Length: 565
Ligand code: SF4
Image 1 (cartoon, rainbow, N blue to C red):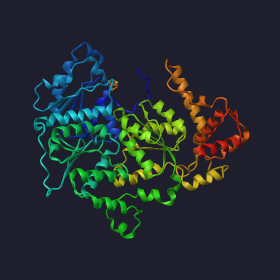
Image 2: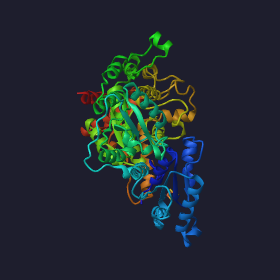
Image 3: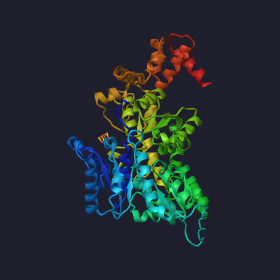
Image 4: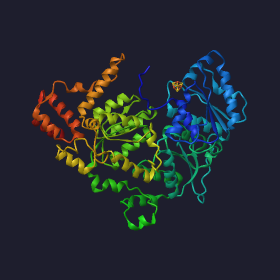
């Protein structure tokens, strides 16, 4: 058992639903208790889809358990086939159905339907949503393509150089973070370097289209959590190479183009050169008036322009699925000049990659799907900006730290009406705006540091976000990091009192035996609020290492000098 309040991922059958819903011509019969239809809302409300997902639930109730639930599966499969006439049927079970072991997949296969039936074995008690999506896509593709796999070691015929190379884009699903707009951006990038798109899967494709996957020269593994297993199988079976760079961020987009150049054996030097040279603010009058294709991101110039100087060294904590967390770490450190003070993922399957990046930055990665553990790590690292999921948005709000969402799980506001990709040149523009927006603007940061007594622009206030803070929000904003940490410790204590296992170590413990003199505290207050937590902790550690019990202003500056060395 695991005490869980929030979960980063749903059960694996939600992953299977994300595949079915992304496609046309696929129907999913899900053996599940009454009530599991809640998952429909993820698609009709969060994604605002205009129709129900293509899912038929058996919706068994308590009284059915005494009868023949297996018969319910057969009836549902038959009804769903008659009514929806899909090209392929997925059949699987949800958590509760897994316990009653009706083997719905095998049952459906034995019914002699005139279409392929894919039986999904998704262990709901050990695996989660992304894994479920990845397995479903893999089994679907495999079922459709197995009959045409050539004998082992058959060499792939060379591409006729007269014909433009073709790529499949694998991985975008329903409920994926910004998948809809990422696809458009990637298709644009490919067009720019002369690559045609063969199939985009699963988003927007049909089973018949999946059968054309082997026609492409290579596969683009756009969201590894969903697509890597399928892409690896396609390489093994059809000799199709895989593009593994995910084009989120300017550097990664350039690497993506370069990797395609190599794999497809095409000259991409023009596109790379243009993206290097054309990185100014695009204020050129002719360009603006002709709406010429930008072909490069504004991020490099924006982050070099003088207004961004104050961003340098901002302490950032990153958490999300592995793909987005890794991409964010690169952008934050290489393209915006932030300092990485924490990184982690809930995608256990990709923990190794995240650990490697963490190590490069002298950190230990947070590999966890327990949001309380993540919350404690955020509080401990005392960042100035959190880049995370919907959960980190809540965590950051409680701690009074600015935050931007970079990864699923997301809420409805992260499926916006406007064009807002994360990938490619335009994606980098979107990222620049959305990450910098929650931070205090440079001038205000400077002025609040100088004049702390202002009645309106109080500490922690960000006038570009809200001009007249309410009493409560002012109290929340001006909450010091130590108060924030204390609130987490309280929460932790409450939880650990209720369980037989201590979940987190109260963070305040380290500060024992050290107190602040009045003049030390006054000096501490002069430090801008967003770095105060860090400095307070460093000073306390400095004092306790040297046996100093009362911290004066002198101790504070000694600590600063010692740590600065
Ligand atoms: S079967 Fe699984 S998904 Fe459905 S309500 Fe129970 S725990 Fe939730």
